[in-house]
Length: 109
Image 1 (cartoon, rainbow, N blue to C red):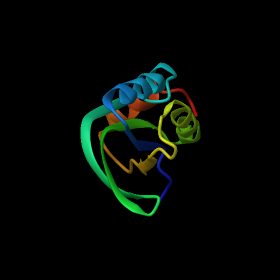
Image 2 (image 1 turned 90 degrees about the vertical axis):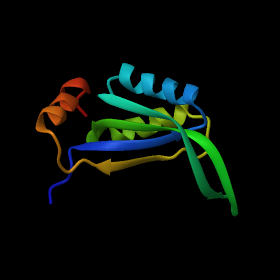
Image 3 (image 1 turned 180 degrees about the vertical axis):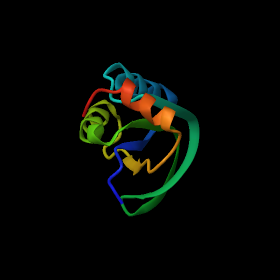
Image 4 (image 1 turned 180 degrees about the horizontal axis):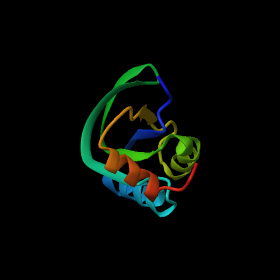
């Protein structure tokens, strides 16, 4: 299978304000075509050897795979967490019109 040219990037943040700041940064810099913000998710995780939990906001970012290294660095600089969640999933297929729109909205990577 060929490598995906587009990805969905998943990012959690401490709150909706931080999520909106990161979303606007990515959109303003043309690193993302669209960012969905889910205002509240309940997260359970292990941190420093202990079970922990947090109420967070969740970003779903649609972009080119080639921009992922830049996106990771931008988000790390703007994010309040020591180790922010920034993971990418390949878009293997979808509405061709939507996928072309992503290409038209983000810079070449």
